[in-house]
Length: 277
Image 1 (spheres, rainbow, N blue to C red):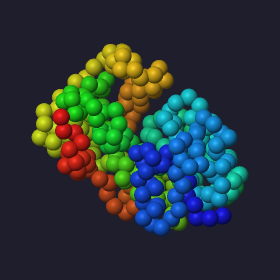
Image 2 (cartoon, rainbow, N blue to C red):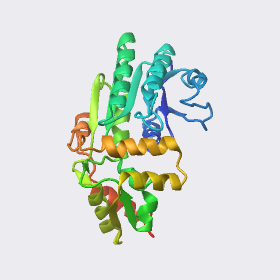
Image 3 (spheres, rainbow, N blue to C red):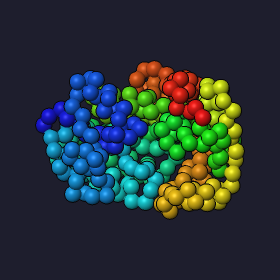
Image 4 (cartoon, rainbow, N blue to C red):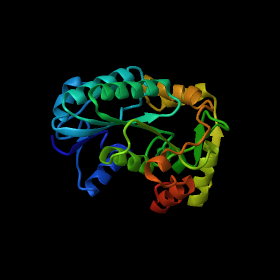
């Protein structure tokens, strides 16, 4: 067995940050993605065994989200394939308030415990980077963000903090059996978050609450597929029902420091010009 660490979703928001940190530490990361040298595809189990060859640890980030149908089964089957290949450290990226995500957590832990492998769960709140690396950047640039959410608050977490916690769990002792629920240090509504971005950029950016049906229709008109629209409907009507309106201290538990604040994130992104009209 080598010191190779497989990073699933190694080109994504958290995965590429994990790869960067592992490389800086002198570890040997292997990117797990469909475009990698050894391709990996969640929907094609025949690609799993080759990418797991000689892998000591794996960062499991399921795409598109653990809440989609079949995700816990896929994650459980992958965990089985990983330990069968000799991998003995599993770190799962999970989500708050999603029953399917908790099911995936249980499956990974059960598989790891059976063979004496180390397992850690990083259970994250909404990513701050959804505002500049995902679907929210276009409306921010356009000057108006319309979502089917009112005053529900979220403790947005920085993906740099997620990556730091994941890398600690992948490379250090003391994280076995831990579930780190990682959030930012403040609760913010989406309107609050947009207002902080507006302040950081010096621009007028409006936030508008729209009915969920109108929002779903707009997504379909924009060309999104039915599965994605259905997932976003589930996310905004069920997961964002207020169940996650509380802070957690997973970043401090894992790293001994406070998580990054949304205002700091907004200022750093604004300085790059990414939100300029």
